[in-house]
Length: 393
Length: 242
View 1: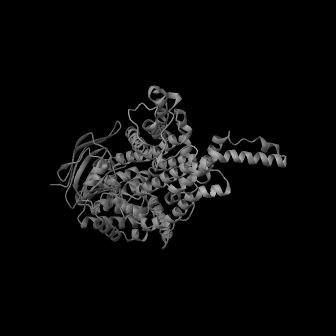
View 2 (view 1 turned 90 degrees about the vertical axis):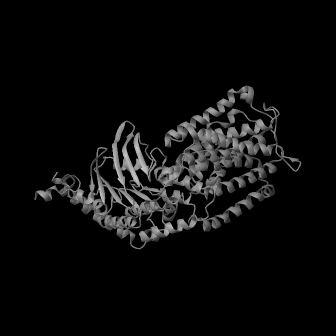
View 3 (view 1 turned 60 degrees about the vertical axis):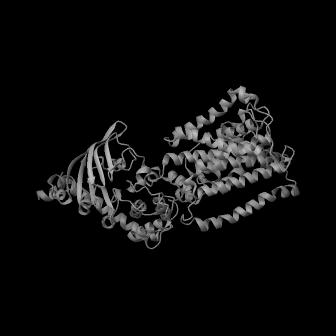
């Protein structure tokens, strides 16, 4: 694919990349050492971390579609489902397929199957924008789990599929009793995904996604194939959910259609928005915060609040249940983000520039402001004179 | 053979018949202007040429080859540069990144560098602002950037839509001087303008468009002398009466 060819000359990209690498290396080292830290302190967060990181993988894929290309997708969970079911069909003894593969091949195939479904969703929505696009993708997100539910001769319907093939490496099989192994699997797939995504964003394709997000008409008149570029955004965005889906299926050994409902789409979207649309690392941090809250923080916080309530005698605190108000808190977090920091916690440079353009002085030097004032005055004069010309007619 | 030729082109916005049989030609190395009031179909003509609107009838030829019905990216690939109405720079990209987007179809790095050099030469101001986000530029600078970006594809013909819109008179003159420079370097230009006075001062020929039809075609001098043009587009009736 010629569009994927990297262009080394993209402006200021090269020094930027070197600077970006430092926090990345620190984060990778920390991620690799985390299981030891976890064990040393006795946190025991490894198990929830696997679920959290699977959600973060999804957020990375959705960020391509929503954050980079600017196409609002409310049905992303559909691709997660497609990835998970593909892996299940390819590895489960309960699968209707005549042959099975091992987990690794299934994961790679899931990646491509999700990509193909990205294209299939991409084609009908190519001409849609904004709200219309959001509604169609929302519909797609509802249709896919429903198809899996109703094709019960193939998918097992509401009974789901179980068991699902486990990954094994060097004769060593990952199973449920080994969360650290799963943790490293997700971390490795995550690093691979980040590498692939960064390569894509630095290429011509990445640039054309950003141009598309900023101004479709200008992008088209610069020679960007709008239809093809949009379709590739859906396809590439969807493909990463194939990784997430296959790991999810294998980790939990059981999938049914109810695990891929609208709340997943919304939660992943919220991660992307909270973290900072368009910024890969922001999305990772935003994803970890939101998913941690969902998977264990809500529970722990409730416990702590009850304990504080009991020891201080403030009765209200002992009755708070943050677990039940999970979705309420997500909603509140989204609203607050939009009001206070619309570019997300860790925005990409461009988003921040756009959203706060009015608040701060633009970096004007060499008397640019003076020129602006001069322009304004001259323009006023011009307007004032105009009626004289028009009086005659 | 003209470099660009429109023959009886009809375009629609939904049910609205916006272009009712436009025919015009641009010869190689020429500046041709299309003047007319708001809503006459000037921008629609340019958008139809560049493929943003698909014409329902008629033919458009570029260097003898039919381009009507081609999608915009294929039209751009033929080296037809379009600087659309309202500037439309990429606000969050830097000036330099905007220019690089203009060279999107160029694969030759040396050619891109030559393009950058040419644009910075024509618009030294853009060089000063190279690393600034395009959205923070003044209106005049954004217009320079929009023209510069269209030049990055090294176009054989440049379609310019209202380059003077919203600019102070001194900037308008500067922009028109540069348009003349670009033309002297060999690029044909089809210029859409409401400021008929400035447009006719740089163009060699012009067309007057009214409610989707060409009502007059003549040399620039001819149009400047034409009674109707002076009255309707140059606002000189009172001067004549007086």
